[in-house]
Image (cartoon, rainbow, N blue to C red):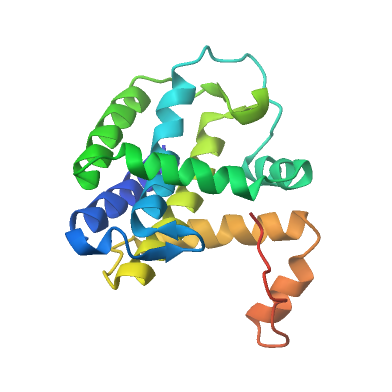
Length: 203
């Protein structure tokens, strides 16, 4: 599946960047309340959750038809940003003294699990909802691309993401914006007509 390839390429870009972070940078500011370590921990969850969800029994049907509806549902249900922040901090601490090695091992386990799954596989995700695996991986590519760029900006290390992965992330984000009713605003901003409101986000 193309999405599996994009997921793997994006995850490997993250691992490569983590491997080039200097020891003194891990406690530096990362994003918002996160240090670089916490941001890395949050980013790594885009890999970890795939393996965790594949360990659960596969549902026969799905609640989310695609990645776009997954994000729209999450936004409609409200996002506890403090909880997200704390999970990132905990995930960063769990990476231990060699974060790049920990995420590399995490990725190896996840890719092995993915290789054993059928193309028709559905997964149970947060909140007890379900989605097709390929569509869930699209959400993980978006998360990996965005947070690998975040880490690049925080550390000054080039991110090494593939143009295709970035394109897929941009495409999904714009489609999510459209479904949330912000498509016109985004289009006008992308074509130089207006600027987006402060704090604008589709996730």
